[in-house]
Amino acid sequence: MSTNEIKQSLKLYIVLSRANKAINEVTNQFFQQHGLNPTEFAVLELLYHKGRQPLQQIGNKILLASGSITYVIDKLEKRGYLNRVSCPSDRRVTFAEITEEGSKFMSTLFPEHEQNLHELLSVLTDEEKETAITLLKKLGLSIKDLSY
Image (cartoon, rainbow, N blue to C red; front, side, top):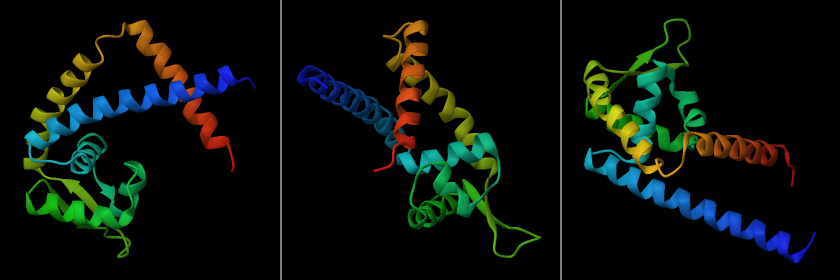
């Protein structure tokens, strides 16, 4: 492996990190303007699109530590955006379920979020987006397979 190959890998890492940071800053600002943090939005988005979810599985689905989920669920429940629902067949399981108010909120917020992302990424053509998706999936999947 040459010095140039190593430098190119480092450059790719820096470019990916900066692009991710720029996109996250804009989207996080959007969430804040609507009274949410990114994690609260992720939980609401999951429930809005996928329906009722066991509390124990939400953390894995949105890539968050389980200890933080309880705090986020509490905050969203106090705001009236979701409810906890006990599982009738297994007392150990509790579901989070989006409320009508939460659905109404997301039905306005999510299309705006989608449009904002589309505008942020509109510098790329559809073909470039498809290429980026393919390459980044390949990269992510290869890293998951590595064992250190």
